[in-house]
Image (tube, rainbow, N blue to C red):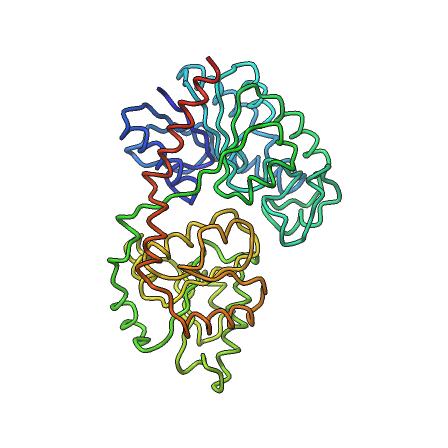
Length: 411
């Protein structure tokens, strides 16, 4: 069985790593895989072909920013991709992110409709059924259910655009993305599955396959002692936040507000006995952080990140929009309980054995949950046990089962 995956990148970023992990899972099970991707480099051990060009990417991105037409350029690149698919003759085509300024989605889906090759499409966000955005919770927008128009955030969220093209983009996507004979959608969360069943894509079957992690990297054998010693916080209650990029929806403001609450030394948790550590901080972010918050730009790999997770008393995910955050399960696998807002699929890995979900999306809501966690600590072994449920070998093997299933359906 040969599986051809398509994604913006391969081996980097969360979705690029998932793409590479699925490739390795295929190889381990004696199957064949190939990845077609749009930009940057791919790991040497992955059979991957870059079909995009840097010049085309910049032109597509510029067109997207100016006119809102992200996903509707790169016609020649898409022709090249289709030609490569025809040469490879895959048994299944697996789409990941088809946005990212490297494909003409109408051309791609027109080919998929006539080729009649079984298709899996993993939605890592909501872009596939909106007229513009990847998420809409933050502005409580429901227009995607009937037809986007007058987008409230086309200038403020990815994929940023000066022009509001949401109405036309929605119509073009609806025509392109519907009517594929043998297409199955995968979502990492039940939250996103529910949205898909209300969207323009509701005609397709939807299967939930949560993201997985590498347990040899993230586990409760990690030692956070050296990290605590390095920053002189051996005896403090450590609250951790992690993000690849601290954009507004990731909730940095709540950590800043929380540090102000800690400044009141009368509280049970205060600046004398508690500390906030944020990972993924840019130079620009550092200028905004109070001196009481420890900001770390990037770690030197999974081992160092696991040590920081292990050093923390609690991991706080203050995200306002998210699908199925991998950071939650990384923290749990390291034996660290999770506090999260009741947001999207962020709650789905958290139960009463390993963390708390707070409906109050505020620094005060986080503070209350922290007090409860400090007063009644979670069993770190049970947290690690919960994290082990997301072993990537188990989760990504579910894709192999799905490939086999849809191949038989199409016969």
